[in-house]
Length: 279
Image (tube, rainbow, N blue to C red; front, side, top):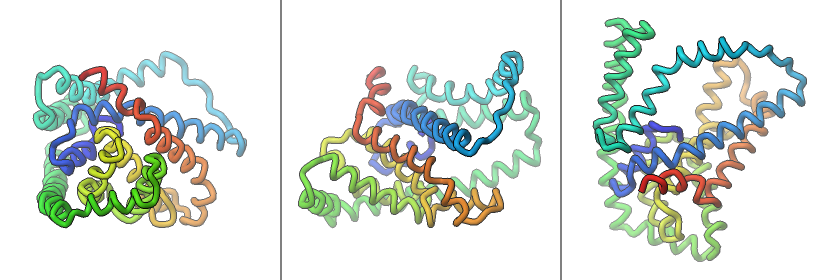
């Protein structure tokens, strides 16, 4: 959700380029902050309830030092979004600028990048790019097939036959996206589901930018949804615990994420307020 999000770019491409990447970047800021605050609140409640000991305050000086050390990396998002908004460069050009800036910072400021690591990162980036480009290449054909088969129209008719209340229908769409998100990664799901659900959402009165935020939030929650969520398995492997044990602790955080999802779905201004300031 927090820009610069590559999933926002993939959603824009899957939507046929009709949804502004800049608007999507801005639309993800407030929902992302809201999600972070909700998860912090859930963490605090769990810590208080279980009696976890609190740490000592490190002091303002140490916080300032840590902020200064992190500032060069944090500036990358500001440079990308600010450059796009000011018209200095396009959204496509921003990716190249971000790479150059990151390499310079990693090599000369943090001194964590050498030639061997650079070549390894380049090979990994090439593999990832090839995978994503293959998915995107298939997206155009898939979107065309969906349009020819009138799948969005049939989906809209099926949903409207259930209820005429947009909130009820959006709740159904959310549930479908959540279930799909437990089985697949976000990028291919965005490519597959956008041509199907975006026309339905716009017909029901939801802005395409807002729907992009709702979709990405849904699929992100799906990645940690038991019992199949891929990120849940990774987290359990890192923590050395079983899925069954994690299920007893995940619900406060899951409920916090679902609450934010409902708010973003029901209140358009949460995602559309910031982009509206720059129209």
